Length: 448
Image (tube, rainbow, N blue to C red; front, top):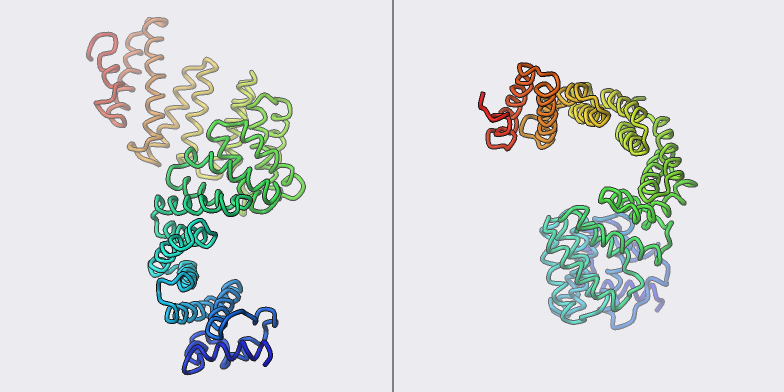
């Protein structure tokens, strides 16, 4: 009897009806001969008695159809493999739970998360008890972690990923980069960038060693980690990651990605003291961003933010007038992208107010800040945190202007107008319990 004939006989022998119900459920063929016809002989041989051979072949069919995206067929073979193995060995036998784990994983992929959970929880418990520090237990932990994450139980998902990592550090320590990246992603969902960054960095370093810095998986993590490190004020790590990413993006990246990475890499270089190259990279990234258009032909959606960042760099380099020009351009870009009455324009106008204040132009600063606050109030409302922050800054400026009216211009009536303006803003937005209210109410030692 040939290997192919033995495989067909093993599959038929699993059921009294020869597997007719399973074949109808899979909907792929009317006989096992047809199912196995496309497969090479190398995939049809398996050790053990016929029942074990048949169950092994069902598992292989499950994997083949699953990888091909044919989930209905894969599910039929997965259920059949679980049913036959658990019937032969008992539900809590490790081999049965291996089949249960694969069935649960497939259910999870199909979005049937609640249905998948009991299979995956039981598989992890049994396999961990049976095998301990073994890759099979680690795989069960990872499948269960994915299910828990899909169901929104992030702390439990993190715990199972830690179990998997502990096992794999012992059994296969040279292949843990992707697992570390999964842990980092869960940490980010739970605690934000700050909680995730150390694990993301370890994952990126590990993937560089395991797969190389320009492997697709490594590059994807670099795309996350570089900007994250910049946001967290760690330009040294950002520069290291972005240097590696830029070496690939410069040659292979799209024009949009070249603009993005060049600008971010330049920011990191400038922040760690490589001023000339950093400024050159930022300038190039900004130029490329100007050249990119959105689908409607308008400015690139990131152009305004990059202009604002470029403005800060120019101010820090002692070029405040140039910085002002870039920031005013950012305001106009935001108007085109988000609309003239948007909160984004309001935020940018407040930033102009801060800049011109540092340039010694207090009256203009108040005007910009007041205009920005008006847009934030109308778009986000008085309760929004950004509205409150800009209101607090405007009140500071109004107090300074009132002092100037009293002490420099000797014009108390004008000074009180600024105080009354500040009181109205405080009561409307910050509330009577805010410290600014008391400062304004008892300005210069008297209530008015």
